[in-house]
Structure formats: structure tokens, C-alpha cells
Length: 319
Image (cartoon, rainbow, N blue to C red; front, side, top):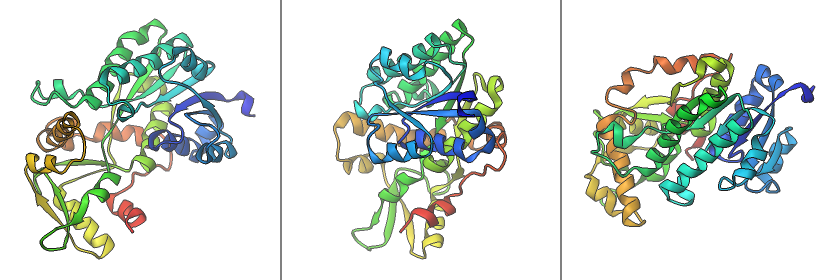
């Protein structure tokens, strides 16, 4: 019976990550029988929230800037998946505060397991070479805070770090003004850059479901959320083969890439450094692409889970 299930609160229930977590929980007979899902969204009346409600998800509203609201959202929950959106405010301090508010609410409500959507600390990872990737560092700082605070109640904290969204590639492939050929122009090396790709809607929840299944064994773990590693050359080859239309790669300078960004200078600087993080540090750190076995345990913890290949993503989403 539903009343005997443990509650999991999922923030961003109608978004990419939260929606993926809910889908993975509902897809697993074991987890679906174990958890009643409480989905947090800005507007429980919108169609996407109503679709979740029709699947048995309790949809509620909460404000990440209001600690009282957050405590209500997690009260009674055994587990929480939490995600924040830096781009709502483009403020590092605001996102850090929101994340810390969630951690504090989980501790106050005696939540057993928090899965926090985090990212690497780029400033530390690059020894200060790249110090403006605020939407990474803010989430990483919340991870540090959660690790320091969790002992107050014995809270388990797992840190899920999503990689480069496959969906970002499609919008950046454009016809070359000189040749007309579909071209992916980015400041990376065609065969030497190692790009971690994630189908954010299909695969996020699979990793989180694994962390929930592992329980205390997932405490303190940092999951690298990757569906597939690929070089830029392999990416355009896959798109060309899957669609039947030629796509080529073109390496451009970071300055040239920056010029075409329609946004404020401070955001341009952040996004350029984000690209250099991928080119020079393989996103998670140099050589990370050869060390993925530690993440497989989360996928395999739930029966039947399989990551999405980039070819599968293109065939399903590239029209």
C-alpha cells in the first residue's frame, strides 16, 4: 500500500533532472514499490505537473529561498533528490544559499539520504587557471557544506555530477556560411578532446536510482554522470551516420567562439572557461575518461538499466 512506502522528495520534478529521477523510480518495480514520490515544482497546476500527478506523484510547491517552505517539502521524507538552477539568477552566492538551505532542511527533518546534483570545483581542479565557472563552483561548494554538516544526524549524501548534455550539441550545429555544410564549431580538438556526454532526461535518473538502492554504500560518493565518452570527431561522425546528412567539425579559437555568444561579458567568460575545462581537463579532471569503472556500480545496482548511446540519442531526437 502507498501508505507503507517511504517518501522521496524530488526537486525540479518537471525539469530535466528531476523528471528523469521520477521516470527511473517509476520504471523500477522494486523502487516503485518502495517509494512514494513527492515532486516539487514551481507550479503544480501546469500540464507537466498534472501529468505527474496522474502517475501517482504528489506535486507540491516550494521556494528554494524560503527555509520554512523547504522544510515542509522534505518533512517525512526518507530520501531527497535536489537540484538548483544557477541560470535563474546567475548568482553564485544565491545558488550556494539555496543548496545549503536544502541541506539544512534535510538535516532538520532527519532525512536519511540526500542525492545532491553537484559539479566539480573548477577553480580547485585547475589550480585557479579557470576561476570563473561559477555554476560549477557554487554546486561544488554546497557539496563541501553537505559533507561537513551531515554528521549532525548521520545523513547520507551522494553527489551526482552531470556531464555535457547531448541536447546542447544539436543547437550548436549550424550551416557554414561559406560552404553551407552543417558544421559544429567549438574550441576543442577533433581527436584529442575527450567529451563526457549525458542524455540528461534518459540517464540522470538511472544513476540516482542506483545511489538510492545502494543506500549507505553511496554515502560520500561523487558520481560522474556520463552516458558515453566521445571525441568531437566521433560526435560528428555519429550524427552524419545516424541522420544521413553530413556534419563536420571545425576547431575555432576560444575568442572566436566567444564572439558569437549573445550574452553579457561575465557570462561569456564563464562559458568559455567551461569549454576550456572540457578541452584541457576532460571536464572532471585530466585522464578521467579512462577511469569510469567506479560509476558503473550505480547503474548496475538496479536491474535492467542501460545507458543511452549518442547514436541512440540522435536517432530519437535529431529531426
